[in-house]
Length: 392
Image (cartoon, rainbow, N blue to C red; front, side, top):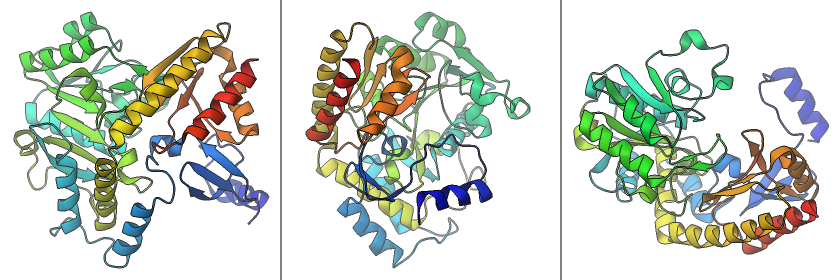
């Protein structure tokens, strides 16, 4: 099928709720995508931080083929072997006491489940979140998303139980957490908000205040989890252990799956009938999730990403010092990197595309680099060369 035919079908039969680029891909391999005409692109987007092990990873492909020939779906009315194995694999990467896993289908669903669990566990009425955050587009997840542009038009669905503070403000955090607070929900790095890491003191204070007031700390690791930051989880950079983690994106390497992880004590709040999902934890999805986690552990992906990302950040900061102020900041951790470009972000995106490199712009002015974690040095250099050419 040709691109024009795809566009025609898209316009005729799909909701027009995405601002799509006029690109259509036929296949992928490692960090590369190939369009309908066979042109190769270096992918610095990874399906929005999803395809962390790249495209057509042999271990993932093998699992999909083998599991789909046996069992794809059976429902949570029965024990699911693959689900139990995947939960054990995830728990093995988590610090104690985080050991109990609930599978869902997406990041938004994971945050919905985390919030429901926190409210039910504490029997309280408020939640603290941050401006500029992004936690998903379903009702509760959207309620705690601190960006009006995502909420506009849906206000009747949204909860009034949210107290918003500035991300990183210790003083505002101290004033927001009270005896009525069920949970504080935080991203280790605000991804959609412009790749903004927190300071250690902010997370330490959140942990201490939750302990003091009996609230739960929820870490939204949907984008940062599973080695993206150079640690298995983003919260590990702050020397805290949350009460609940939400996961998705990289967990399925492209297959839709999400999860929350909590201690056995907190998890015991959900009894039969408290929460559920028809497709969550299906055999195919959880077999893939187990393979993703085990592959990352075997390949020491966290160590690889810390080294690779640190080296790339140094190179990008060196370019920024010679940019005459056109790159205002380089920030991030591991392989989630943001270039604050001012008015140049969209123009750089177009320049990169001309040179066969896919990049993403978030928060209006930030080029967000979230490539597959297996990104090669050659692909990093290719982007650096385009960036320097753009700035010259």
